[in-house]
Amino acid sequence: MIINRNMAGINILSKMNANAKISAKSMEKISSGMRINQAADDAAGTAISEKMRSQIRGLEQAQKNIQDGISFIQTAENGLAKIADPNLHRLRQLAVQAGNDTLSSGDRQAIQNEVNQILSNIDDIAEGTKFNGINLLNVPDTLPKSTGERPADKSDIVFILDKTGSMGSNLAHVEENLQDFTTQLKAKGIDIQLGLVAYGDSAPSQGAEQVDITSFTNDLKKFEESISNIVVGGGGDFAESGLEGISEAMNFAFRDDASKQFILVTDAPVHDNANLDGGDGLSEFDIEDVALLAKESEIKLTVIGPRGDATEEQLRRLSEPTGGRYFDLNGDFSSQLDALADGIVRDSLSGNVDLFLQIGANVGEVYGIDLSDARTESLGIDNLKVDPWSEAQKAILKLDDAMQQVSSERAKYGAYENSLGHLQSSAAVNAENLTAAESQIRDTDMAKEIMILTKANILNQASQAMMAQANKQPQSILELLK
Figure 1 (cartoon, rainbow, N blue to C red):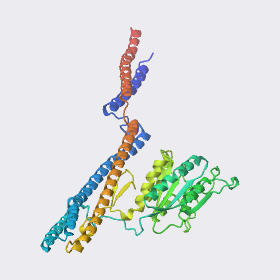
Figure 2: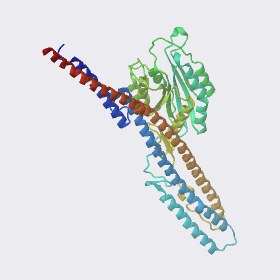
Figure 3: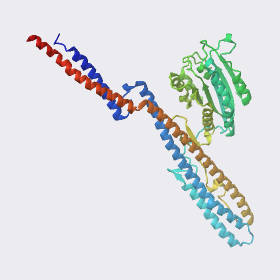
Figure 4: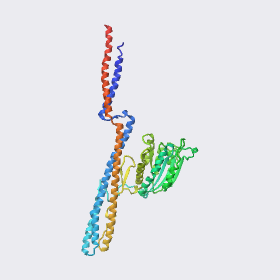
């Protein structure tokens, strides 16, 4: 028996301290409602959660941006409505009235005076319809516009497909949804050319080329056959990689007046620092080199790849510097290709876009709006005359054209509003789903944490009782001294 070291007490004290830490941590989680209050609570979870929070806040702001855009469009459409009715309707009524030869010259002059006043009213509406200081019906020169000279109807698209063994079903998904993708582009008036580069590590002994290249074609059936003929397989370790696939695609004969799009589909990282020959004397490319070359060539690279691991981070380093997007390889190919088609349409039509709305949390997720010029000069009625009779007849034709122009612009704004409404709903759903996912990582399970706290408190009380017993044990030695 010893009294210099109370080992039982020391052991109990260690357990008391451990229980006290558990109790304190549980109280912190319960009081904050957060499972992660500092990075040490869950290092990996913190990194994932912060990334999700960034996306959630971006989507919440995107919803506000879209609502501002809807208000913007409604203001423009309302201005056009006021120009149409009563102004253009009244002008046409006056032109029809002036076309009647029962009127005297004085009558015609009175009609002309009212016509002049209404024309002035139309210009006042066009000049005065503004949103946050931006002219809506008098296209201002101060708005940032695309400086490109290309016509707004062409896009050259190269699919860069990984053909290694695990990619078979994914290549089939591309082929299955390709027709809807191209139909959507053509329906928007986009003249497309499709090119194909398939790369992999198939050994020559397996009867397959390591890189397959199909030149640009407008024939969808021929392009689909090229995908069907890809030999999937491999297992060796050859120099060909996703980076070389991109490098090969840069050698395609792009049209000078077309937007340039690359679509990389892969389930694995590209081989970084591969031995590549880009045709310009460069070798030993890495991801940053390839992304920079694509950007300098005005090529937008979109990647359809895996989510949630180092591969995604690596592939994003390829796509994001070019302004491209990143899609989930295991997601809905149909909806993702639809979204990609919308982006290509925006890129192709950027020469006609007056301003963009940021409708998503990431770079490139924008929506273009083409404003209107509703001044009398643009409508072709600035010098409208109703005297003599022949001028009244011409005026009726001009006003019919002006009404058609205004109605067409109103329909365009209506389509914008409907489209933005759908995009706002989509952003809200995405934000809701991300919030739910982030909650699973970050928030406290209150029932579980209260159970842990209750357990820790009971153990603390038991430890205190045992500490009292441990402190009594050395006193028994005093009995030996009597």
